Image: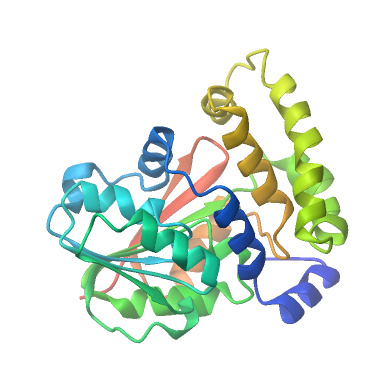
Length: 269
């Protein structure tokens, strides 16, 4: 997909933002009931029963909440990977009730397993990576023939104000400031968003969803959008093309909350 020269330069220099998200996961580490609702939306079209007995890979697990729910649905085993020390400590705490969960310090680019998992997913990670194609290749490698690869991506559709107004500030300012400063600045921005959400806007399901979130949860979302050095917003065609280039089949793109894309594909038999 097309990007500005400055964004491409950021990619080469930064290669992602694990230390910045480590700060976020350490700060906002609580597991909330609403996180299950978000997980169910991000993993459309899977249902809780679809996880029963499955082995899965969670690539870029954060504090482990997206591994928690399929394990609670009866998944047989999981490997949850990330690369920041604080993030991994939080993930181990979150997944401590599940002896079948392995939390591993590992980059998505370095996944060694091949033909092992029933499902490999990455939620909210690939759009922050310097090399999305290499990441998809590793997810495909990790699943069994016929296994499912699922990725949740920021969508370009309905996000014009973020792409053209907020994103330039994120790229040239917020992504470069110290994390403590960015976290402080997230407070007034969250207040503005909180007030803006009070009147209901018809036809915007994502806004309806987050209107019911607590202020702290809303601030975590605002902060997460401020801190990354790389943030891509995919059109439906670009999201499908990412999976097509990886050689996956049966590709489907689901318009999640009419603001993002949950894309699934199968590894050829």
